Length: 95
Ligand SMILES: [Zn+2]
Image 1 (tube, rainbow, N blue to C red):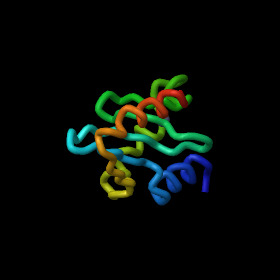
Image 2 (cartoon, rainbow, N blue to C red; image 1 turned 60 degrees about the vertical axis):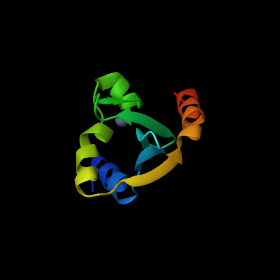
Image 3 (cartoon, rainbow, N blue to C red; image 1 turned 135 degrees about the vertical axis):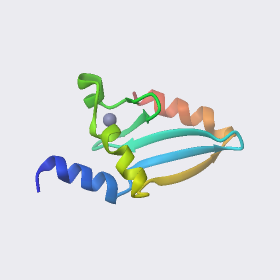
């Protein structure tokens, strides 16, 4: 198994792509758990905050997001809108 395949396999099987939904506004934030930290990404904008995207303008998180979605291998987490701000702040402070 080559390392790229392993990465993708664990990305899917460990449900490392997470969709955080804030209610009742229904705002959605996508994150993916990388090797050492969590990255924020936006599939609609085609943006990811990981170094791979930063250097190459593409990364396997975005590439395999569609596959994860098709296979339903996404962790769904629901928050309340009250938590939105602190969630964003903690996400941004990690960038
Ligand atoms: Zn990425």
